[in-house]
Amino acid sequence: ETGVTQSPTHLIKTRGQQVTLRCSSQSGHNTVSWYQQALGQGPQFIFQYYREEENGRGNFPPRFSGLQFPNYSSELNVNALELDDSALYLCASSFGQGMSTDTQYFGPGTRLTVL
Amino acid sequence: QKEVEQDPGPLSVPEGAIVSLNCTYSNSAFQYFMWYRQYSRKGPELLMYTYSSGNKEDGRFTAQVDKSSKYISLFIRDSQPSDSATYLCATPKAAGNKLTFGGGTRVLVKP
Image (cartoon, rainbow over all chains, first blue to last red; front, side):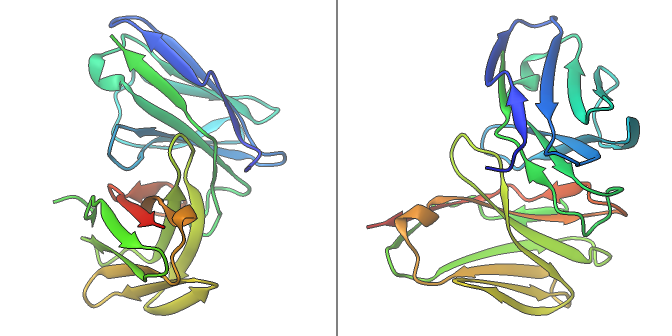
């Protein structure tokens, strides 16, 4: 196990609703990244936080937002859910400023289904 | 064209065979390459990390990078049923460790 935990494990929402997913990073890791993994595809980078500040964002609309807290836990919020948001959402923590050589440790993911 | 591409498989091999996995990438500026293994209902876990062309070996796993062809490979020797998983190649396409993944190749090792 990586020490990265995510909650909830599964979630079902309806189109237009809002959702909050949570991640608890490995102890001491100050960088957290979120990824979206659609069924049968590789993960896609959503955004990264370093010391509570956004440190890069992928090609996702503003209705995807995040927070990182002083205890290194983090949240991913998605507003106005669409059917295409159905996916496995992964968080990954690493120690450092998010350098290319910093190993990321992934959590088990939250499976979101939008009906 | 996707930045990192993989054959989705599935790739089915008998136990003990060599598993050969490949990825191609589009941007010659990519420098670091990773292979992740993802079991069903789990998050990806890092297997191998390489920089620059050449081979890197770790136990039964060997990673190769050919920058002239923009081609990366992962070989698994003496494959075991426990190697059955999806294998993802990835690269940080810009400064930092924000990863771009291939689509993954599903591998099934039959006893």
